[in-house]
Length: 392
Length: 129
Image 1 (cartoon, rainbow over the protein chains, first blue to last red):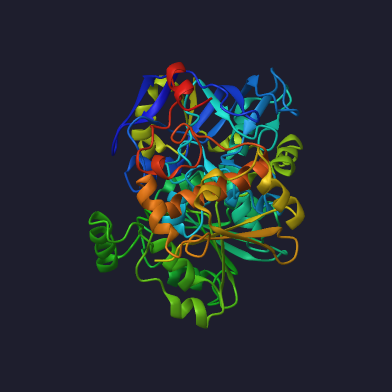
Image 2 (cartoon, chains in turn brown, purple; image 1 turned 135 degrees about the vertical axis):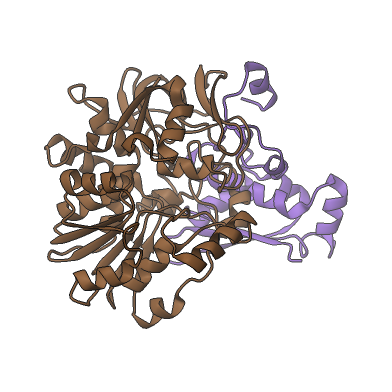
């Protein structure tokens, strides 16, 4: 089959590789009909995530048709149309039983490696380094899906791929970010980053009852999408004024947002002058892996007693964590890779009910063979790119 | 350096002790090492803790060291592999395999991962699928 593989920093290529096979009784094989490039794939592309290996098939957002099942699979049948959640979860461990699927205790066969980095292993993830298991990804014609009865959600035939594809990651991830904010009604939520996940964090905050949502980004076209499609009530373009904290305070009568969602992660762009330079140097010399401007500003801007919700991806360490502000303001930080399995059914129902059409983020549709162009366009925000969908 | 390892498995202590002795689930490396193994009820609904102590098992005070010499690899990572695989097998009925680690959790494989792409037929036989 053809698959998009990582072959070093800033390089991916579409190659012929063996077809996937069932390796376990609980596996299924899915013939992929749609797949996408995630913002977190750019962290791999840019070379900031350790334990990548040349030849790794990328991709963790995909859907398709079940074409083979292992003997232990009972809920899925050949011919079923499914969306596959990005965290691989067994459904049986204590964490899965408590709907903490992204920290599944069993699905990562490189647990010993993950333990070295994080203290504990976390769930396997398709096409997302060997730290999360070394699983082949879904930017390919076929993928093997472990624990096939636990993850994939069956999709009816009368709804097109693009409306449901993002149930695999970015819609639940954005929704999770808003869910962590304990929205009761009347809140002001600030969302750092108006990329695909940020768009869904904005839309979800509105769905959950926030009164105002402030979108923060450096690209006007993304802020326009945030307002026109996701429902943001206000915007901050930090390329015009980099002092985000002051602007947020001014927009909220000095209080600060009730909750702040970091939908940026480890490659934040907006750091000011000396601190940004410091981060760039430390990241380049690998003595700091993650640039933390968005997280720092989220903590400084959030109102005392508020919630900082972190859904942007981090991989290692950041410096200059504002521990004093975090502690003295009595903030709560809530975070994680999304427990997608928990949100699949309720969010699928919201899509079916017409409460949201997740396809609004799609700006580029390419044949799988053009994946390398898709990465470049997405990385450099060319051609007003927000989301790239690949068709095998 | 400590020569202890522990894992918690979501099953009752009675069930764990029984499976630990069974031919299907028995952790072969740990058994060969004659380590001291204790089973403790975990708090609340968390199942059972399995504690393995390599230094205080069998006749030898420094068994960990001896095992290391015998196998040519550090004993503790292999004990941890055994514990993880036991937990995986008991809780999920399978040992998870990825394309990078097709044999499942393995200390040796940690340092020489395959690329995360499907295996050729010939390779599948080698890794026992």
